[in-house]
Image (cartoon, rainbow, N blue to C red; front, side, top):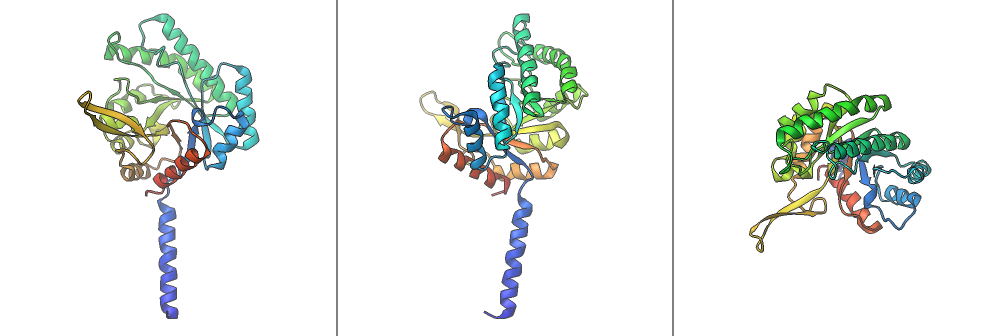
Length: 293
């Protein structure tokens, strides 16, 4: 091998390495606390998440002040931040309900979640804004959820916590343009979108939604994947959640879309829980997604 060929090969390798490094999205990897082994102490759970490569966790609404304190101590001890809180009452008691008692419970759940976020040093609270069902018309879900969220925005602003509304299988906000318009209707920097990549696959294309919502509207991101397979028993397509990169998601197109809008926030995995080996594999799969592989 000549000196010139050695230099050429080295230069090519350096260029390839630089190109590879440039491809990685500047997104931080998060994991839900519900995915971590429940038999462990909070400190050990957080340490495990950090050891397998995650950079933050997302907690869930916690009414017990003692547990809230334990989680804060675990975060401080391990240096692993709790970046967000997933509100846990919005399905059972949606803001769009016609029952005042249900709405009140939902509002209390949001107040608790905001308190959690402040205690843990988080920046967002995830909220499913409304649910359309036989008892709740689409128009009613839209108007009722807007009314209640507007009541919550002053509390969010006071505590510097963003309310991030998520797209889920709730038969509501079914297009990227409508979702964007819904977020914009509040005219507040304290109300943004929590974009779930996997939830869109049933009725749209994640890369389309990402570009429509844009960096200014998307506060946080959830990662999941699934197959929409034909079930011969029920003779219909049935969604089946699977591990990241094992489903129907076109992750390269998702990568391009996030790169195009310049998103730089957190992307949190929302899958089933598991042991260290499983979590390490999930973390490695996220790395491949962020690297555009």
